[in-house]
Length: 121
Ligand code: 5GP
Ligand code: ZN
Image (cartoon, rainbow, N blue to C red; front, side, top):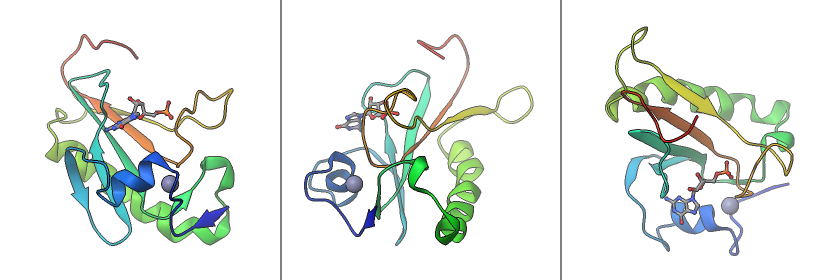
């Protein structure tokens, strides 16, 4: 369920810059970009560049990758303007599968923050 990239996948195309996005961060493993329909003043997505379909596809072989992804979250949240903890903070959301509300089937973490009220969430 993990392949370098899927030519039909929207987020593979975004990570490959075949579809433009507002880039937040990029390295060899990860790509982060603003959500096109933000719910909150800060709303960006972090994805592995590798095409991993969902959190349901994560196993022991992904422990290192997932650890590095988690370590990026607070750094990028601060960079993008989330207010400091504890008065500020952020929400980290990963929708998984149909019942989990996943619309794009390339695993991604939503990072949402900023001064409330928000549109949703
Ligand atoms: P999901 O519902 O799968 O957790 O979230 C998919 C997210 O991707 C949605 O919040 C949606 O706004 C965002 N999205 C969908 N298409 C695009 C796009 O073409 N560009 C960007 N930047 N975000 C997108
Ligand atoms: Zn993909």
